[in-house]
Length: 163
Image 1 (tube, rainbow, N blue to C red):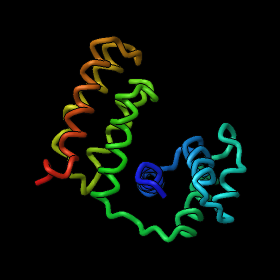
Image 2: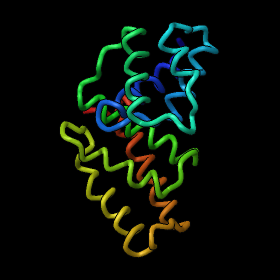
Image 3: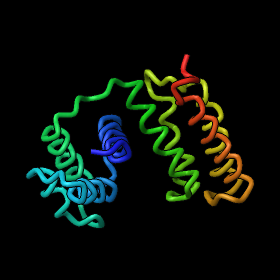
Image 4: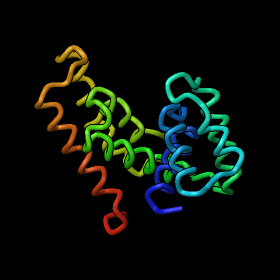
């Protein structure tokens, strides 16, 4: 399995650990695993699901089966937070998720055991500005500020910057 596919799998595993897997991402991930030649029964079962209609509970259950089938260990809480934060930041920067979604997903930095908990006030300020001042619709200034925060988080998560 290549590094990018493993990173995506670990991020989705972490998301399921701390909250819920994203059914769409889980199904697409399973399809990509199949394309990479990883074709165990659990991978095939998840890939066969509908990315649009798979209930979250079933996505969690099927993803757990894939994880078990591949023998991946469960990440500790700080690692899970870092995986989700990094994945969310990458999606903010490549605009594969809307700023409105990304701003709220970054609340993960405040999770227990987070190596990024000092950034929670910045996340909360952006989310409050989004909801209270902008009525839940991001403007260019918020997108710029959110992208800057995402870059800050990614920089903090790079191995050479970890304390």
